[in-house]
Length: 159
Image (cartoon, rainbow, N blue to C red):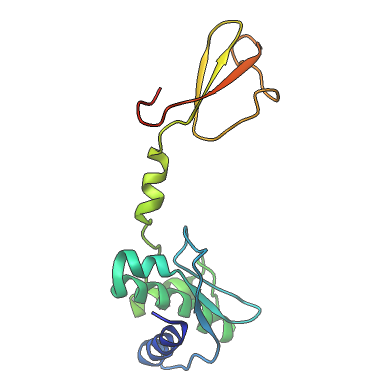
């Protein structure tokens, strides 16, 4: 979906559920991975994550748009637009917006990534598995304070 179609979609939702026009810009932002969207208080623009649309479809994305429009309209009306405010919670429930967005599938599997490195203490033999590279010169063994050696693991066979 293009930014132009998103703009039309947000304008339509704003008129249909809030009876107020959306007069600013709505765009997609591919960098949004841990959040479904965001509202900017200074510019009044809205950004939506295209990953949510790809992963969960238009119904979930519409709930995210409603959530951001709650921030937008309440802020412009000088009412409580933050998540903790009663005005926000009431309006969100009234229009059927999402309180939180669903976690993306790629974010869930990220923690299951195999270990790539093994640090071994030269003194006591203690082993530490790591997913990301660390500089062994900066750290010592947590057990005996000995010097650490790093080895890259074969990703197929694991540790």
